[in-house]
Amino acid sequence: MYSAGGKITHVNGIRLSTPVAQVFNIIVEYSDDIKAMLKHPTSEMYMMINDFNPVLLRKKDMYEAWLDICCKFAAKDDVPLRDWIETKPTFSFSGK
Image 1 (cartoon, rainbow, N blue to C red):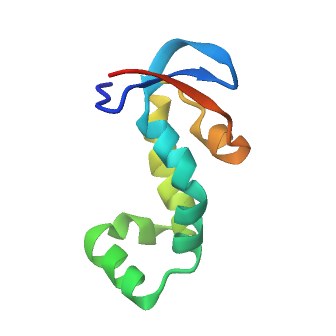
Image 2 (image 1 turned 180 degrees about the vertical axis):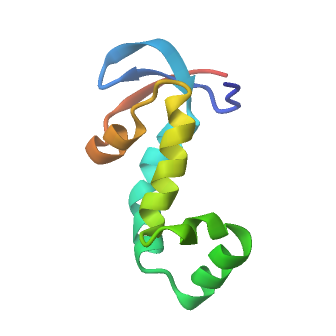
Image 3 (image 1 turned 60 degrees about the vertical axis):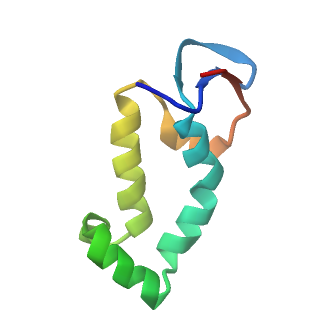
């Protein structure tokens, strides 16, 4: 996968066999904020989700719907995204 922001090369000091897109770090970094927003959306946020990402409304839990989408995407690169979100590991990066 192309990654304009570089690649994750190490997780908790352990080298990955294949570096992965740095976007997974961004997802992990902001996952708590996204969870809070999707678990308790404002009425304005709910309307925006309804208009621009209604797939999140198909499940009772919008955060789990979002996480499922992200994890399916991550699985293509063998990224254990759910585990990374839960454990918040330390990442090291290469340049672009």
